[in-house]
Image (cartoon, rainbow, N blue to C red; front, side, top):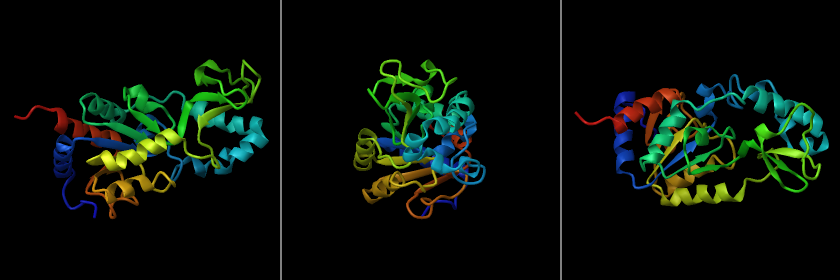
Length: 256
């Protein structure tokens, strides 16, 4: 189903027309949008799960041995990811939101890069690594305010264990982003999917539900995904930053 028979240039032109005509567009993003910021995906070639055991981020493992779990969490999410900055794809989406062309962004990412780029209406399916929450008194801290020199970190208020405020394996999806995502499938004219292959449940079901509701699907990915031949209307093949920069020129450049 994915429209792959035309050139990227032609598909970008067609996507721009759809986006300009849309009354409400939802951006739906995954790990691929942050690759150009230096954050590798979790799955696939070169993904984090080729280096680390995903069981290390199981909530039962975390609660059973928080010091050991925090060693890996610190290495991945704070030493390695901590310096990442928004790339062109994040910045274009923020500009589109500012101009009224994106109504909300639903993201599977926990890196906070959409917000750092300037997007305001962001709903995080899997939480955010830039916040730590106390499992005792539920006080929240910005990650930068907490020393990770001694692990596991503890709450200054009650001494309780601090946990990154993202969804571990075995935890449920937060209610607010779940509601926002399902609502988006019924109020949107267009979904623009960027950097997700559609493998992670239950997040991967949202675009299918949108399609069933008559939403047009634009997909930006370097390779075909689980969506491309099933629900995608316009496939923009390439790296997220490069494709979104070309799309932004088509959207924002004055007509000659």
